[in-house]
Length: 415
Image (cartoon, one colour):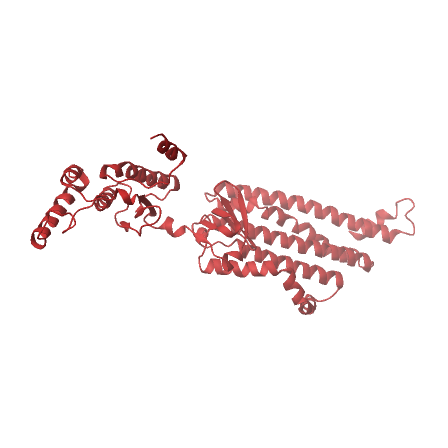
């Protein structure tokens, strides 16, 4: 082949005296043309094979590698290898040119390998995220660390080629720059350590509802990265939170509620102290018509009458002995009402208690769990329960406490 090229070069006009240079140039041109042809052939073959395999495969995983361009980037390796292999043979008489071309080819080869590796990492990460376990154990931060390692070694290898030094010597020489590197990559190092702690301790997962008040974040986790965590708030804004802050600062994760059998309802109704009174015969007769507590009224009335007959000498005074109160009967009604409510989980705690009186009345606290955990349904159930209790309180001769408003004061002034 070389003799054929040299024979053709000698026939060129004005080529006398430059046969060697023109011959080497023609040989390099042939190498470049061959490399370009090989790239086209390899790319066509790879794409053809990949299309056939993907068409016959029922799995969607192979589509991911095509999406991230793994095969497309791999096709570039063939022409670069051709140039890297044949350039020294063609330019063996021109060491400087041979060294320049082979060095550039080697650098391009290293960059291509790094691009292929990062594309494979991205594809594997997407495949991993298609499995349910990815919600509990996110690996985005580890993928980013792996990419940083690839970029680091790419930089070392390229630097060793340009400087003509061994990569091991460069790595050893960088020991003196450790402090500088730690300062430059401080956030990445802290984020990586924080990511490890978050993953190993399963503190957060993709899709978790978290509240991070220090950063005004309240929503679902979109992404757990090396240095940041993205939270989509309920107003559809996205808050970016440093990964390290989830370790050093407090936050609330609602995953436990979402995985439990119910969502807690804890709210109080404040009763006006002046509306609390003993129940007389008329009020007890009226309360006895309420289905939920008719049996309670009957049993409690019998218990109180028996006690008073045995222990009270003068039952005429309401102070002597035991008496039912309207607020106690109201508490019994709330318990019975919640026990019959279809959206209350009866297997979890159900408690109605009277708290210490305050300047805003007597708090009657409802502590129970809704069987619905969806936010909108939960709020609707909670609202329906308290709508009913606010309305029914007057049936027990109780008044809900409310601070006087302008209308109340105006009403007082006109009466």
